[in-house]
Structure formats: C-alpha cells, structure tokens
Length: 163
Image (cartoon, rainbow, N blue to C red; front, side, top):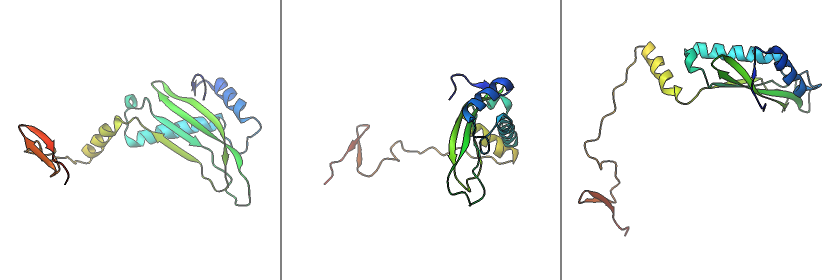
C-alpha cells in the first residue's frame, strides 16, 4: 500500500514505484505497461456494463499476474497483485505487492463497484430491455408478519409464555 496513490499518467512515478517492489522478480510480475493495460481493461468492462463516467468514481480493480502454465514447476514463483481505484480524472495505482503464484494459477482481474450503484445499474439494465416491475403489495394488517406466539392487546404485541 502506498502512502499516496499514483496516477497512471505519471509514468516515471509509476515505473519507479513498481520497480522498487518488483526487484529482480520480472518473469511473472506485472510491469507498468501491464498495470496500465489492466486499467484500460477495467474501463472497457465498465463501458460494457453501461456505467456512466460519473458513476465510476470509487470503483476498484484488483489484478493478479498468473503463475506458470506448465505443471513442470514444482514450487511457487513470485508474481504480483495490483489494486487500482477509479478517481474522477482516471485510474490510480493504490497498492502493488509481490505474491506467490503457483503453477496453473490463472491471471485474475476483478472490478468492484460501490454498492449504491447496484440499484441504478439494475434499473438501467431492465429498462433497456423493456422490463418493468410492479410495486410490492402492502400487507393490510400491521401484525401480519408476527408469529403465532404473539398476542395483540391494547395496540401492543405481547409475547405469550412458552408452555
């Protein structure tokens, strides 16, 4: 985790930060180009979902380099995991760490959106396909959801003693 996030447009700072963590482990770790490509892929995924640019702020992308595809490796290799966060002006690198990767472990990329976008995206998705929902029905009785061991007296629900 960096003290301050690094803009992906600041190539010199990005390369310096990544290279200081990578060290000599270059075969299975991500370099600055890979991190920028991961950000572009995350942006493309958000485009495909139809997320408006203003709603992308706060999204995160967690990307890990994969391990060797050959099963002949018996031990782990040093890979990397990067976390990117979307700001109003674009993606920034928030975290970059070395990590053990095992043979056959595929590279992963996960994009996470803020929870409050869930309803907006669902509404847009269904509206684009001409699907509408009815409003939920309101229960006529204010105590219809209470279990049978409740007794309603003088406007208050009281628990009956268990026999």
